[in-house]
Image (tube, rainbow, N blue to C red; front, side, top):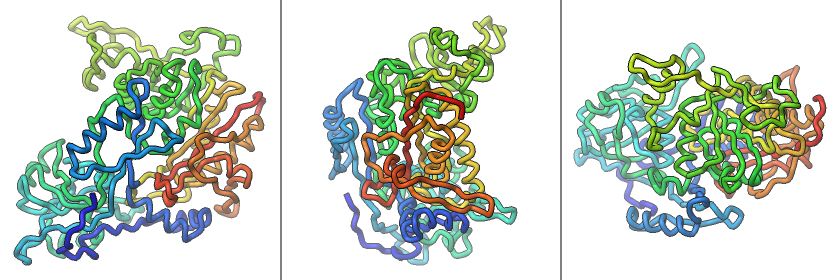
Length: 537
């Protein structure tokens, strides 16, 4: 429901939300060449605000889209006088779109005495980006606060954006706990003009906010953008996911009984989507190099009652084990995994005897026991069995949702830290990962490559590298095809290097999701490759 109220305090100036995304000048020139200066300006503006809807992917192994739709309507009717609109797309029958509203013009309810300034809270940029997506303000995100804020007080919430340092880095430049007096002498007073994201009610006093380690500090009551929250809603039945990520799993087109690799799987959204499309029949191997992220994947699979997912703590760059010869590839799955202490298989470590998930502290204790053997209390312990990699040609399909610059994520209030050199480093890293994907997929298989960035150096340039390096790879048509075409051409980065992108015919086979398009998505890119008979690159 759109809030239309009288704006009492300078709504068009200081107490408004009119962010402007700043870029490194060379990066801006690079993107302006790729997109055109006018279009890139519109992309830059779109990135500062959230998408106008949330996508919920339904776990069709446990329920149906129709049933979830009915349950959501009932829940939203209890929470909202005018519940958000829920819609569907025939191309994605397991997806529900829940629409938000905004931007809203807000009244910040000044004190009856004009001489008394508003009570305010300054939050970090990352906290503000989460709030714009519907989150509350948690204790770690509060950087500064007015004096004498008590529990129950209304506060205006603004955001501090990173500023350059004299050493060439970036910093918020605010000591956590700074007192605000509501005068022009306050830290970042001028910089916060146009960076007010809403109004809330303090859940703690000022003292409590800066003493507590966790918990909600401010509950947002009036937001610039209203997007429903789905925390703890229909757990195991729905998964909140960006639309292009949902499309990515469908483009992979996994089939029941196949062996699939998700190379960079956390937090598990695409992994579980793949397993559901396979009807939980076959095998999905999920990799991540973070222990806690592997735990998150396993927890999500358990909530969704998916059995075919196996998650390993393993750096994707170490995922190929060339010591497994071609003759060994016909061995059973247990024989095709080498054991090592560097990469931990957590599949059987995460639950207690009753099948409940253990806390991270208990998990760490149990893993120490496994590494070190029985302790003084005679607890059971043994050597940790760790996967050191997989044989070449082990998988029918490989998904590489590569770590990237994430310059397509929304809302984004800061981007100036990226330089042309840092963007090139992302591309170099992604090519190394793609090389591993090529080794791991079998002839006749499929590789899907995706990123959440608008950077053509990590998208079209990767496709150019793949096609020029591996003659047995060809771009394949994608279904569903919801995004637009890729970028054609090239860019001369310096006197020694020109970055090559796509040809016209190739551009039509990839999907690029533009934040400015009518789909109103994050910036995203998908390429699908068919793998022919392999030969040396």
